[in-house]
Image 1: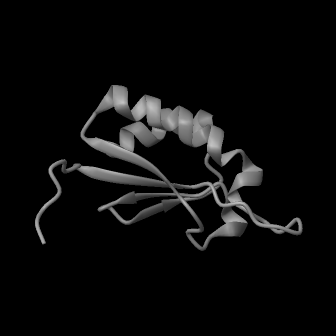
Image 2: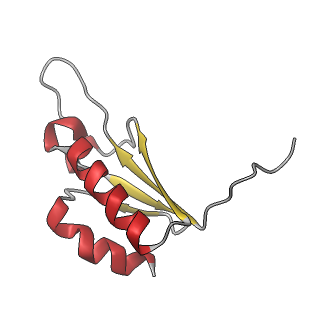
Length: 91
């Protein structure tokens, strides 16, 4: 095993999971659109921070949900209007 060539200072996971049968899920809360906007904003702020899509983070009732690692911070009901505040949290 060896370290990957590219290392990141922080990792942001945005749940884009979609569930069947009308169950609560982040995809219904526009999480994919949020992910795309957040990824662009974070890249402009600090290219050493990685924003990645993920499946269920286990907080479906709080969707759209994201996690900031290694800070171990989980945020729910995030929208594009929250992005400036999220950027401040990354500093």
